[in-house]
Length: 464
Image (spheres, rainbow, N blue to C red):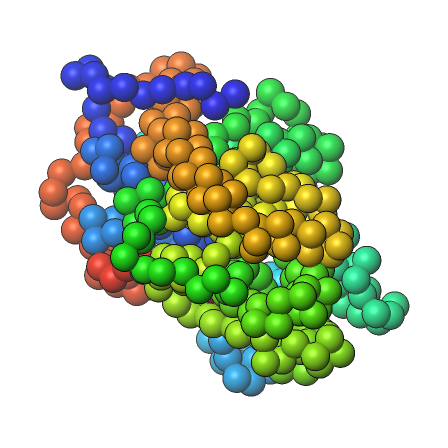
């Protein structure tokens, strides 16, 4: 698993790669971050990459072509019940997306898959391989039937998210809503079992996909995510605030375990009255987290920031004495890796793949244990030498083990193996690499209008 390499060779031509993401803006979470860095690493390695995405659209390296696949984007619409137009009745994908939102479901992956399959039915011959980023839609099976090699990344099985949300639900009605919203999982499980090639990003996710999705281990390939060690790097010119700790969490998403960190903060405030917490995430007014802040009397000690750039993330890491990752489960744990790359000491739970990322270069505590979090935070706050040694060890671990360049090499080798299988099946030959003219953006929105985005990626701060 994950030990393939694709070294330079005059006999290996560049690949034409199509990456898919049903919603890919970095503010929407780690999937957008994954698409940005993976596509950049692939073009850095000399390959031609297109990204097909629904709204909200990703921010990409200017060398990567964005093909827009617009949907209804109802989660950004102020009145989704009024978003349907007569023309949408002519499209099953549009109507299904609208009706799903109206009835509490999440139909975007399904609708995106129908649109992409239709697009690739016309344009699929431009690509050597299609790589999906966890839409796991029925459209992927249609694309495979067209003869295109298909790879899908599963960061972790969303069955984990669903169960944690059900466990945290206050009543039967809320549990019903959670089950309805996660109804897309039936599709994802069916598609995962039928796809021949799936990539996952940690040993823990590998195990969980086999157990919870029923995917045969022989169809799974482990390729770790990378961390941008050029951007996420120590900032010696910035002095950390000795009383600031930092975390990245969607405030009311039970999976992220923020409530346990807030409880730990409450335990520590008597001993450290100046202690404060910076949360990269958005506080929902009237939500469970806001209520917990009031109950614990922490309103003045906790600050939320969202919609920030990666450069701003680096600055926030640098101004913090330590970073806490209290998640109940992570398929990988990008915030932990980013903080370590910045030389900031990390305390993490043992939820999911976090111990794989942190290793012995941080402090790992049981998930859901606010007392253990409090004791570990206390330990680091009073021991500057330990903070420094963990910061150095964390940076070294990320440099040695987690690189987007290595991830891209392994993926390209995997692509070539799959392409070789397809070629043997069809007894066909490689197409030539794309010309400069072929790499120009598409011009018709209905055909997938292309856009180039040159800004530094911004994101809400959630991990993949």
